[in-house]
Image 1: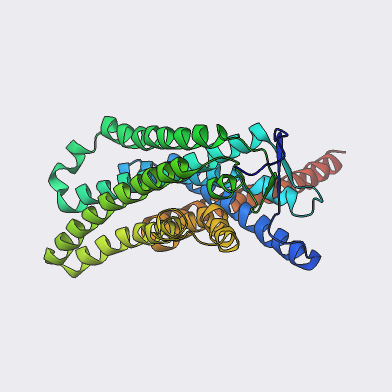
Image 2 (image 1 turned 180 degrees about the vertical axis):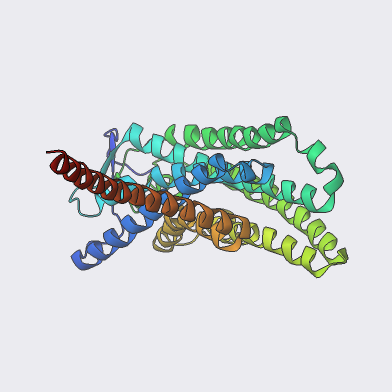
Length: 341
Protein backbone atom coordinates (compact mmCIF):
# COMPACT_ATOMS: atom_id res chain seq x y z
CA UNK A 1 0.00 0.00 0.00
CA UNK A 2 1.26 3.50 -0.80
CA UNK A 3 2.34 5.68 2.12
CA UNK A 4 -0.31 8.22 3.01
CA UNK A 5 -0.68 10.89 5.62
CA UNK A 6 -1.71 8.86 8.67
CA UNK A 7 -3.32 11.83 10.46
CA UNK A 8 -6.81 10.84 11.55
CA UNK A 9 -9.57 12.73 9.74
CA UNK A 10 -11.80 14.63 12.18
CA UNK A 11 -13.75 16.69 9.63
CA UNK A 12 -14.57 16.74 5.94
CA UNK A 13 -14.62 19.65 3.50
CA UNK A 14 -17.15 19.89 0.67
CA UNK A 15 -16.17 21.22 -2.74
CA UNK A 16 -19.78 22.27 -3.16
CA UNK A 17 -21.58 23.02 -6.40
CA UNK A 18 -19.65 25.99 -7.81
CA UNK A 19 -17.05 28.64 -6.89
CA UNK A 20 -18.30 31.33 -9.31
CA UNK A 21 -20.09 34.13 -7.43
CA UNK A 22 -22.80 34.77 -10.04
CA UNK A 23 -23.65 31.06 -10.15
CA UNK A 24 -23.63 30.91 -6.34
CA UNK A 25 -26.17 33.75 -6.12
CA UNK A 26 -28.43 32.15 -8.72
CA UNK A 27 -28.19 28.72 -7.05
CA UNK A 28 -28.88 30.14 -3.60
CA UNK A 29 -32.00 32.01 -4.72
CA UNK A 30 -33.31 29.05 -6.71
CA UNK A 31 -32.61 26.41 -4.03
CA UNK A 32 -33.94 28.63 -1.24
CA UNK A 33 -37.23 29.08 -3.12
CA UNK A 34 -37.38 25.35 -3.87
CA UNK A 35 -36.83 24.54 -0.18
CA UNK A 36 -39.53 26.98 0.94
CA UNK A 37 -41.98 25.52 -1.61
CA UNK A 38 -41.06 22.03 -0.37
CA UNK A 39 -41.81 22.94 3.23
CA UNK A 40 -44.97 24.89 2.39
CA UNK A 41 -46.35 22.31 -0.02
CA UNK A 42 -45.73 19.27 2.15
CA UNK A 43 -46.79 20.89 5.43
CA UNK A 44 -49.90 22.20 3.69
CA UNK A 45 -50.65 18.71 2.37
CA UNK A 46 -50.31 17.20 5.87
CA UNK A 47 -52.56 19.87 7.42
CA UNK A 48 -55.15 19.45 4.66
CA UNK A 49 -55.24 15.66 5.10
CA UNK A 50 -55.47 15.70 8.88
CA UNK A 51 -58.05 18.50 9.13
CA UNK A 52 -60.43 17.36 6.37
CA UNK A 53 -62.50 14.29 7.28
CA UNK A 54 -62.89 13.43 3.59
CA UNK A 55 -59.18 12.53 3.52
CA UNK A 56 -59.23 10.17 6.49
CA UNK A 57 -58.69 7.18 4.19
CA UNK A 58 -55.74 4.79 3.72
CA UNK A 59 -54.61 6.48 0.49
CA UNK A 60 -54.25 9.90 2.12
CA UNK A 61 -52.82 8.38 5.31
CA UNK A 62 -49.92 7.11 3.20
CA UNK A 63 -49.71 10.42 1.35
CA UNK A 64 -49.37 12.35 4.62
CA UNK A 65 -46.42 10.13 5.59
CA UNK A 66 -44.89 10.66 2.15
CA UNK A 67 -45.08 14.41 2.74
CA UNK A 68 -43.46 13.99 6.17
CA UNK A 69 -40.64 11.91 4.65
CA UNK A 70 -40.12 14.54 1.93
CA UNK A 71 -39.83 17.31 4.55
CA UNK A 72 -37.25 15.32 6.54
CA UNK A 73 -35.33 14.18 3.47
CA UNK A 74 -34.96 17.71 2.12
CA UNK A 75 -34.22 19.20 5.57
CA UNK A 76 -31.36 16.75 6.17
CA UNK A 77 -29.45 18.32 3.26
CA UNK A 78 -30.87 21.67 2.06
CA UNK A 79 -30.18 23.92 5.13
CA UNK A 80 -26.51 22.86 5.33
CA UNK A 81 -26.13 23.16 1.55
CA UNK A 82 -27.61 26.68 1.53
CA UNK A 83 -25.31 27.78 4.36
CA UNK A 84 -22.28 26.39 2.51
CA UNK A 85 -22.92 28.06 -0.85
CA UNK A 86 -21.20 31.33 0.14
CA UNK A 87 -18.94 29.85 2.85
CA UNK A 88 -15.22 29.88 2.18
CA UNK A 89 -14.73 26.73 4.24
CA UNK A 90 -17.53 24.21 3.65
CA UNK A 91 -16.75 21.92 6.56
CA UNK A 92 -18.61 19.22 8.48
CA UNK A 93 -17.42 17.17 11.44
CA UNK A 94 -16.79 13.43 11.20
CA UNK A 95 -19.87 12.61 13.31
CA UNK A 96 -21.89 15.31 11.54
CA UNK A 97 -21.08 13.67 8.21
CA UNK A 98 -22.13 10.25 9.51
CA UNK A 99 -25.38 11.73 10.86
CA UNK A 100 -26.20 13.50 7.61
CA UNK A 101 -25.52 10.38 5.54
CA UNK A 102 -27.69 8.29 7.86
CA UNK A 103 -30.68 10.65 7.79
CA UNK A 104 -30.56 11.32 4.04
CA UNK A 105 -30.21 7.63 3.19
CA UNK A 106 -32.86 6.62 5.73
CA UNK A 107 -35.55 8.91 4.36
CA UNK A 108 -34.83 8.11 0.70
CA UNK A 109 -35.04 4.36 1.39
CA UNK A 110 -38.22 4.92 3.43
CA UNK A 111 -39.78 6.78 0.51
CA UNK A 112 -39.08 3.87 -1.86
CA UNK A 113 -40.84 1.34 0.38
CA UNK A 114 -43.62 3.81 1.20
CA UNK A 115 -44.35 4.20 -2.51
CA UNK A 116 -44.61 0.40 -2.68
CA UNK A 117 -47.17 0.47 0.16
CA UNK A 118 -49.14 3.13 -1.72
CA UNK A 119 -49.08 0.99 -4.87
CA UNK A 120 -50.46 -1.98 -2.90
CA UNK A 121 -53.21 0.27 -1.51
CA UNK A 122 -54.20 1.32 -5.06
CA UNK A 123 -54.14 -2.33 -6.14
CA UNK A 124 -56.58 -3.29 -3.37
CA UNK A 125 -58.83 -0.27 -4.06
CA UNK A 126 -59.14 -0.90 -7.81
CA UNK A 127 -58.71 -4.66 -8.20
CA UNK A 128 -60.51 -5.83 -5.03
CA UNK A 129 -62.90 -3.00 -4.11
CA UNK A 130 -65.30 -5.25 -2.16
CA UNK A 131 -62.49 -6.41 0.15
CA UNK A 132 -60.77 -3.01 0.37
CA UNK A 133 -62.38 -1.75 3.59
CA UNK A 134 -61.86 -5.10 5.30
CA UNK A 135 -58.28 -5.61 4.12
CA UNK A 136 -56.95 -2.06 4.51
CA UNK A 137 -57.84 -1.75 8.19
CA UNK A 138 -56.18 0.76 10.48
CA UNK A 139 -53.84 -1.94 11.78
CA UNK A 140 -52.75 -2.96 8.27
CA UNK A 141 -52.19 0.69 7.27
CA UNK A 142 -49.97 1.25 10.31
CA UNK A 143 -48.00 -1.89 9.47
CA UNK A 144 -47.56 -0.74 5.86
CA UNK A 145 -46.11 2.54 7.16
CA UNK A 146 -43.96 1.13 9.98
CA UNK A 147 -42.54 -1.54 7.64
CA UNK A 148 -40.84 0.97 5.28
CA UNK A 149 -39.26 2.81 8.24
CA UNK A 150 -37.95 -0.49 9.69
CA UNK A 151 -36.49 -1.76 6.40
CA UNK A 152 -34.91 1.61 5.65
CA UNK A 153 -33.41 1.67 9.15
CA UNK A 154 -31.76 -1.71 8.59
CA UNK A 155 -30.37 -0.77 5.18
CA UNK A 156 -29.09 2.69 6.17
CA UNK A 157 -27.57 1.53 9.44
CA UNK A 158 -25.57 -1.11 7.56
CA UNK A 159 -24.24 1.42 5.05
CA UNK A 160 -23.34 3.99 7.69
CA UNK A 161 -21.52 1.56 10.01
CA UNK A 162 -19.54 -0.05 7.18
CA UNK A 163 -18.59 3.30 5.65
CA UNK A 164 -17.43 5.03 8.83
CA UNK A 165 -15.46 2.02 10.06
CA UNK A 166 -13.10 2.60 7.12
CA UNK A 167 -9.85 4.50 7.78
CA UNK A 168 -9.80 8.00 6.28
CA UNK A 169 -6.14 8.91 6.43
CA UNK A 170 -5.63 10.81 3.18
CA UNK A 171 -7.41 13.88 1.87
CA UNK A 172 -10.60 15.00 3.60
CA UNK A 173 -12.08 16.92 0.64
CA UNK A 174 -15.41 15.52 -0.59
CA UNK A 175 -16.28 16.33 -4.19
CA UNK A 176 -19.95 16.75 -3.35
CA UNK A 177 -22.36 19.05 -1.49
CA UNK A 178 -23.40 16.52 1.17
CA UNK A 179 -22.11 13.28 2.70
CA UNK A 180 -23.05 10.60 0.19
CA UNK A 181 -21.66 7.07 0.14
CA UNK A 182 -19.87 7.05 -3.22
CA UNK A 183 -17.66 10.15 -2.73
CA UNK A 184 -16.84 9.03 0.84
CA UNK A 185 -15.70 5.61 -0.34
CA UNK A 186 -13.34 7.29 -2.80
CA UNK A 187 -11.57 8.97 0.17
CA UNK A 188 -10.96 5.77 2.17
CA UNK A 189 -7.38 4.51 2.37
CA UNK A 190 -8.42 0.85 2.50
CA UNK A 191 -9.99 -1.69 0.18
CA UNK A 192 -13.64 -0.72 -0.37
CA UNK A 193 -14.66 -3.71 -2.48
CA UNK A 194 -16.88 -5.16 0.27
CA UNK A 195 -18.51 -1.75 0.85
CA UNK A 196 -19.27 -1.34 -2.85
CA UNK A 197 -20.64 -4.87 -3.04
CA UNK A 198 -22.89 -4.31 0.00
CA UNK A 199 -23.97 -0.94 -1.43
CA UNK A 200 -24.90 -2.56 -4.74
CA UNK A 201 -26.80 -5.41 -3.05
CA UNK A 202 -28.70 -3.32 -0.48
CA UNK A 203 -29.42 -0.38 -2.79
CA UNK A 204 -30.47 -2.86 -5.45
CA UNK A 205 -32.71 -4.63 -2.94
CA UNK A 206 -34.38 -1.37 -1.89
CA UNK A 207 -34.93 -0.12 -5.44
CA UNK A 208 -35.66 -3.42 -7.18
CA UNK A 209 -37.81 -5.02 -4.43
CA UNK A 210 -39.98 -1.96 -3.91
CA UNK A 211 -39.99 -1.30 -7.66
CA UNK A 212 -41.11 -4.87 -8.34
CA UNK A 213 -44.02 -4.51 -5.89
CA UNK A 214 -45.03 -1.29 -7.64
CA UNK A 215 -44.68 -2.82 -11.11
CA UNK A 216 -46.74 -5.93 -10.31
CA UNK A 217 -49.40 -3.81 -8.58
CA UNK A 218 -49.78 -1.53 -11.58
CA UNK A 219 -49.84 -4.35 -14.11
CA UNK A 220 -52.82 -5.76 -12.19
CA UNK A 221 -54.34 -2.27 -11.91
CA UNK A 222 -53.98 -1.68 -15.66
CA UNK A 223 -55.66 -5.01 -16.42
CA UNK A 224 -58.53 -4.15 -14.04
CA UNK A 225 -58.96 -0.67 -15.55
CA UNK A 226 -59.17 -2.04 -19.09
CA UNK A 227 -61.96 -4.39 -17.94
CA UNK A 228 -64.05 -1.53 -16.54
CA UNK A 229 -67.31 -0.96 -18.42
CA UNK A 230 -67.73 2.78 -17.86
CA UNK A 231 -65.45 5.49 -19.25
CA UNK A 232 -65.94 7.54 -16.09
CA UNK A 233 -64.62 4.68 -13.93
CA UNK A 234 -61.57 4.24 -16.14
CA UNK A 235 -60.88 7.98 -16.11
CA UNK A 236 -61.15 8.18 -12.32
CA UNK A 237 -58.85 5.17 -11.84
CA UNK A 238 -56.26 6.57 -14.27
CA UNK A 239 -56.42 9.97 -12.58
CA UNK A 240 -55.81 8.43 -9.15
CA UNK A 241 -52.87 6.32 -10.30
CA UNK A 242 -51.16 8.69 -12.75
CA UNK A 243 -49.85 11.03 -10.03
CA UNK A 244 -48.39 8.10 -8.10
CA UNK A 245 -46.75 6.71 -11.25
CA UNK A 246 -45.23 10.11 -12.04
CA UNK A 247 -43.62 10.30 -8.58
CA UNK A 248 -42.35 6.71 -8.85
CA UNK A 249 -40.85 7.24 -12.32
CA UNK A 250 -38.94 10.38 -11.33
CA UNK A 251 -37.53 9.00 -8.07
CA UNK A 252 -36.63 5.51 -9.28
CA UNK A 253 -35.04 6.77 -12.48
CA UNK A 254 -32.59 8.97 -10.59
CA UNK A 255 -31.81 6.39 -7.87
CA UNK A 256 -31.20 3.62 -10.39
CA UNK A 257 -28.86 5.85 -12.38
CA UNK A 258 -26.75 6.71 -9.31
CA UNK A 259 -26.67 3.50 -7.27
CA UNK A 260 -27.77 0.48 -9.26
CA UNK A 261 -26.67 1.00 -12.86
CA UNK A 262 -24.32 -1.74 -14.06
CA UNK A 263 -20.80 -1.08 -15.21
CA UNK A 264 -18.79 1.96 -14.20
CA UNK A 265 -20.42 4.45 -11.87
CA UNK A 266 -21.23 7.95 -13.15
CA UNK A 267 -18.69 10.73 -12.69
CA UNK A 268 -18.93 12.69 -9.47
CA UNK A 269 -19.97 15.89 -11.32
CA UNK A 270 -22.92 14.09 -12.94
CA UNK A 271 -23.59 12.42 -9.59
CA UNK A 272 -23.87 15.86 -7.94
CA UNK A 273 -26.39 17.12 -10.50
CA UNK A 274 -28.58 14.02 -10.17
CA UNK A 275 -28.25 14.01 -6.37
CA UNK A 276 -29.37 17.65 -6.29
CA UNK A 277 -32.45 16.63 -8.24
CA UNK A 278 -33.56 13.74 -6.02
CA UNK A 279 -32.62 15.33 -2.68
CA UNK A 280 -34.01 18.84 -3.23
CA UNK A 281 -36.25 18.99 -6.31
CA UNK A 282 -38.26 15.74 -5.99
CA UNK A 283 -39.52 16.53 -2.43
CA UNK A 284 -40.90 19.77 -3.89
CA UNK A 285 -42.51 18.05 -6.88
CA UNK A 286 -44.42 15.40 -4.90
CA UNK A 287 -47.09 17.67 -3.32
CA UNK A 288 -47.39 19.65 -6.57
CA UNK A 289 -47.97 16.48 -8.61
CA UNK A 290 -50.54 15.10 -6.16
CA UNK A 291 -52.39 18.41 -5.84
CA UNK A 292 -52.45 19.18 -9.58
CA UNK A 293 -53.39 15.66 -10.68
CA UNK A 294 -55.83 14.87 -7.88
CA UNK A 295 -59.33 16.30 -8.27
CA UNK A 296 -60.24 15.70 -4.62
CA UNK A 297 -57.21 17.65 -3.39
CA UNK A 298 -57.93 20.55 -5.77
CA UNK A 299 -61.56 20.68 -4.63
CA UNK A 300 -60.47 20.61 -0.97
CA UNK A 301 -58.03 23.47 -1.57
CA UNK A 302 -60.82 25.51 -3.19
CA UNK A 303 -63.09 24.81 -0.22
CA UNK A 304 -60.40 25.89 2.23
CA UNK A 305 -59.72 29.03 0.20
CA UNK A 306 -63.44 29.88 0.02
CA UNK A 307 -63.84 29.20 3.73
CA UNK A 308 -60.91 31.45 4.67
CA UNK A 309 -62.06 34.21 2.32
CA UNK A 310 -65.61 33.88 3.66
CA UNK A 311 -64.41 34.18 7.25
CA UNK A 312 -62.32 37.22 6.39
CA UNK A 313 -65.22 38.86 4.54
CA UNK A 314 -67.58 38.08 7.43
CA UNK A 315 -65.15 39.53 9.96
CA UNK A 316 -64.74 42.73 7.94
CA UNK A 317 -68.51 43.00 7.39
CA UNK A 318 -69.16 42.51 11.10
CA UNK A 319 -66.61 45.14 12.08
CA UNK A 320 -67.82 47.63 9.48
CA UNK A 321 -71.51 47.08 10.22
CA UNK A 322 -70.77 47.26 13.93
CA UNK A 323 -69.04 50.59 13.44
CA UNK A 324 -71.94 51.97 11.38
CA UNK A 325 -74.49 50.81 13.97
CA UNK A 326 -72.55 52.48 16.80
CA UNK A 327 -72.39 55.79 14.90
CA UNK A 328 -76.14 55.73 14.15
CA UNK A 329 -77.02 54.96 17.79
CA UNK A 330 -74.68 57.67 19.03
CA UNK A 331 -76.35 60.28 16.77
CA UNK A 332 -79.85 59.21 17.85
CA UNK A 333 -78.89 59.32 21.52
CA UNK A 334 -77.46 62.82 21.12
CA UNK A 335 -80.60 64.03 19.32
CA UNK A 336 -82.83 62.50 22.01
CA UNK A 337 -80.92 64.33 24.76
CA UNK A 338 -81.28 67.62 22.83
CA UNK A 339 -85.05 67.15 22.53
CA UNK A 340 -85.47 66.39 26.23
CA UNK A 341 -83.54 69.52 27.16
